[in-house]
Image (tube, rainbow, N blue to C red; front, side):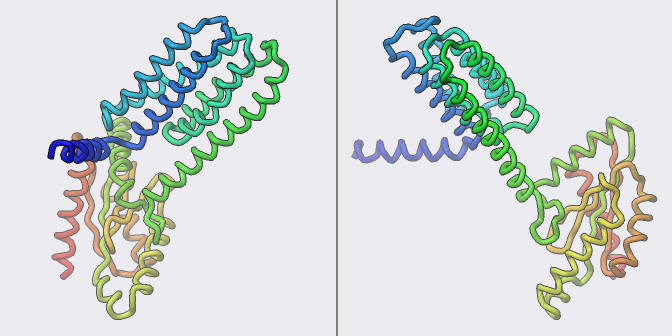
Length: 323
């Protein structure tokens, strides 16, 4: 029985770890492992090098530690360690290329740059990712120009172009994915996934600038009857037209989000409740008297949940009065 239960226990532990880890931690671990294995190959190369084999084994050991850290802490793996590791990788590879008299080891460093570009392009903000890749290409480019191996320049150009492509492709795909995750596919409004961060951002800005902020919950009246009588296609058109009408009255920094089947949230910075009511009054003729609303003005110490809770209570009171 014992030999049979051990694999099951190991499998349970693996599943538990997978439940707590994140893609960022997993990929960070895999990237550091690739760097460590590359270091092992360099150290195993018997040809002499300026920095010596001990140097190679030292940073390979560091790469191993970095590879194990995300596995150990899983979702608690901090991003600043990954950023520091990226800058350290750039510095180490550039130093090796500056001091090495072996073209092969320089090429071995360069071929890892597209991997670095993919990693930072996907997981880090565009400015930081571009800074890391630009630093890597500048330092390695200077090393290649000063190297005694003229064949390295075409290789560097090709890998630099590949790195820039990987960086921009990964960044574009990540931005597109983030947009799709945060956006309601029918109306194009923000959805619940992207809403809490947006509300927290506006609350922080309102507190910092001492300007008002109003949250409005807007709910369509008798929307279920529209779907039942005229079909879901007609209901979808109403939702799309409503969002289009709301945006026609919006300023560039206002936000609309779909928080339910027929319920929307409007986030109006730098406006008080009276001003918000004026916006809603202008909206009535464009959409018809087919919806009710509740609003709440931000107060010191508010969170997204508290603000939405007050607006929801006001909406409930309004709908009760209209009935």
